Each structure stands twice: as C-alpha cells, then as structure tokens.
Length: 271
DNA sequence: AGGCCCTCCTGTAAGC
DNA sequence: TGCTTACAGGAGGGCC
Image (cartoon, rainbow, N blue to C red; front, side):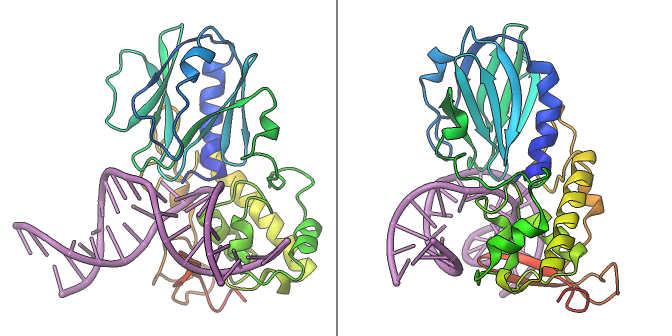
C-alpha cells in the first residue's frame, strides 16, 4: 500500500483543491471494501464544506463541521481529483462530488481500502485511538523506541510495522530504513541498543522525507492526486532487490519471508 | 499481553 | 501457448 509517504503525497495534492469547497453529493459504486461504506454518508455530507484535509498514520481525514470522513487506501488505493464528467474507471468505488463540478474518486482494485465516518471526535475513533507517534514528529525518538522495545522478542521489521508502536511505516520503508541503519530486519526488537535505535530513527525520518519529496513510491497501483506516479521507486536501495548487489558492499542482497512478508537485507552490512 | 496467522480482493508474473 | 500458483505497498481480529 500506500504507506505514509504515499498518503502524505496524496494529501498534499488534494488539500489545496478541496479545502473550503462544498460537497454536492456522494456516489457509492461499490460499498464492499474492507468494511462497508456507510450509506448514511449520502445524507450527512452534501452541503458540508471541507475545512481541512489532514493525515494520521495512513488515514486521510476530511474534516467538515458535521464531522470527519476517514479514507484509507489499503494496498492498492489511490485518490484523484478529476472533472465530474471524466469517465469512471472499473475500480473507482467511491466518489465525492464538489459543487465546483470536480470529483474526488477512490480507485482501489484490491478493495482493501476503507471509507468511514468518524464523527466529531475522530481521534477517538476505534481505528485512530491507540496509534503510536507520527514518525516525523519530535516525540518520536530513539529513546522512545528503545524504551518500548525492551523485552520484546519480535523482529524489528515487525515492530516497525506495528501502528501502535509508530504510525504509518509499511514494509517498503521499514526495509529501506533498516538497511540505512545497518540493522538486520530479523533482529529481535529487544536486542537493539539505544545508540542503534537513535540511528534507526534518523534513517526512518530521512527515508520518509525523501520519499515524500519524490511523490511516493509507485510499484504498481499508486498514483498521486493528479494521476502521475511517484518516483521514489528509483531511489530504493534494498526493497525488491533480491539477488542484486548491495549498494554499500556489492554482496548479493538476500530475501526471506518473515511473518508472511518478504524482508530484503545484506548479510554483510546489516547485523 | 505479546506474537503469529489468516483473511479480505484483483492483477501480474513466474513456473511448469 | 495456456493453465496454475505465488505474491503484492495493510492491518484488524482471532487464536494460542
């Protein structure tokens, strides 16, 4: 999926075009996503003005005075703003039409995404309450990761994917940051020193910032709000590079399954 | 409580 | 060539 940089890229593309615009109508083409899209949105949203578009973890929050609409892109989702007259794609499942005749469309071939109503206190919504810190904010530190990883036996890659520990990191950026920090993805989280966690936090931050600047990573489905792919896939150092030479030492990059998802690493550079 | 596995889908590519 | 199988950027829920 769209991980944090892809969701943030989408937010930055969409926000200036929809903020202060009024919602004309909601069109649901396929309600069966990860959870059913509530039909009540058709009554709740028309007439509302979009005050702001914010992001928490991999969720986009469309804030109106009546409450907040949550959109999650799942594994294959993307949001585009197009003129209402643009022909609909097979996988466009949800549509938010503005009074200026533009339409915000959710395309999601695999349908793992979600469109949900979070009411007036979105931070208390079940899916948002209990999320860990945003990795680009200041309270996300090496000390924090070090403290909450003590006695944890799971692999550091899985620890980073846990949204209750830190929000928004997925498999691509976990792999990339661990390579930059020189940490083996399979290493138990509880067996990494404070110093190495500080290095890891710097690696996570720089990787995410660079990916946002590049418009995210487009391996297959992801598109920015204007339809262009991101280009961070050209900057990936380790993810998807099985059998290729390590960019630091030239040794063959290895790939193994860890908790059902692939990790890529260099046995020489990552310990 | 923590950690691991399954599941929801479609599309693509590899393998035979 | 064509069929079958594996795998993919997520993550909640259930189970041990």
